[in-house]
Image (tube, rainbow, N blue to C red; front, side, top):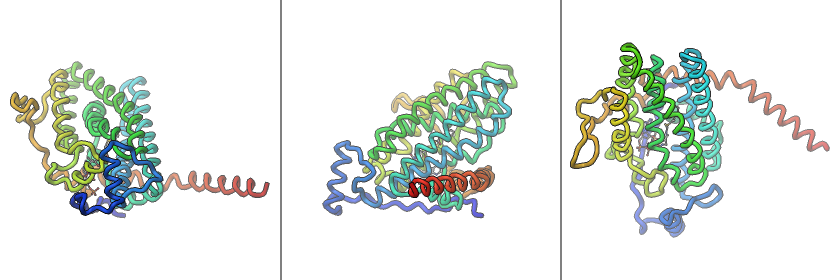
Length: 330
Ligand code: FAQ
């Protein structure tokens, strides 16, 4: 069993119009005109591959992302909190399903994508390799992790690939609710006892930098951004979205009376944005290589769930075969 996500990132320079074939030029013109590309239409091989990679990773993130929160369903402090958390975790499963379906329209099966995840050939978001140690972490995940996810996904509603862009519309609606529930937990904790306030601060301390890492490496290190943006598979740069997230989140932390664990966070009158420190990128790349605190546990849990579900899949297939044999005999 291989737990690392040893996928090598390679990015190609964006082709200039003169290097493109006529078909590629016509395709790029459609993208530039804001048209949506639909499943059966011609698309460059690289466009298809990039979408499969990004949508697949995104789907895996939703499914693996259930694990840190699932950890707290049995320990939620009230029945109401438990019901809300259960609904949120179920939503993530739904997001995974829409996204696997969107990827399937590109000619890859869900089984193939899951096998690639299980064999360490595909990535999922780095954030889910961090543990949720206290109830306040569930607040921080909703507030910061869903907050970062929405910041990235709202622009993706305008992605050039029809099925992905439409999946994003629904996902973003649900993610907004998720973020509100996280912030609501943080408000309760931040306005609670000293011990609760300390837990809220501790959760923010641990989740701040990993949340900033969700947007991916700096623009200088991002291998895919240029081509993905030319194809409108990505709408904004990694650093652009990260800055927007910081600008949105700092005032929210102030409202909670919590401190961002970065002494360089300061409003910059000249730029109109908050200055902030970059995360430790060596930690980010190390997590991607499979060495985060929970990589082994997360992938292990997914592989086990897959194996434990084999009898359900086998049963469904046997039933489907029986039904089609019956229809054929009629
Ligand atoms: N973690 O060249 P770039 C959620 C990889 S939201 C792991 O910049 P790209 C909701 C990247 O894949 C989270 N790997 O790449 C939820 C590439 O490697 P590759 C999921 C990362 O694709 C909330 C390499 O580094 N959201 O789950 C990360 O242009 C709460 C070079 O990077 C999405 O997936 C990372 N953080 O930009 C669920 C959104 N960052 O593939 C439960 C869609 C980068 O060559 C609870 N995805 N890498 O082997 C995207 O927008 C983009 O894929 C980026 C990365 C922005 C993530």
